[in-house]
Image 1 (cartoon, helix red, strand yellow):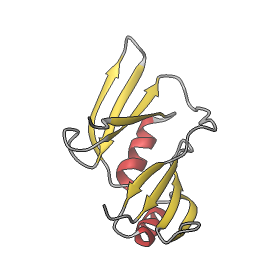
Image 2: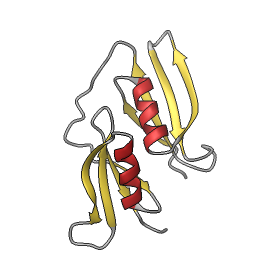
Image 3: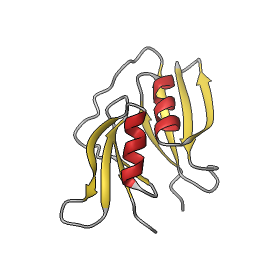
Image 4: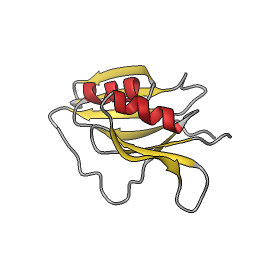
Length: 128
């Protein structure tokens, strides 16, 4: 078994694609409009879907925002250097919710960003 993707709904597809590609360095893997269903799907990630999990952005035509809800936590992204990743995100005017530093009750270095729709993105330096 393999995790294929995680889907989140976005209110402005172009703005979200720009955030995930420009701020977080993902590539746009594929994108398709579904006129009969009035939605567009865009898949982003760090390599081919055959080898990596992807992030699916779903844009329902005409919807500009969503209530994230209390059950959603965050999307975690492994980076080489959390401090550097935060500085680069700031240079691109990303919303930094928590500066880079040791996690609560641990030593792992973490930081949190917020994407254009309010989803939390955790950056962490964890070697697998």
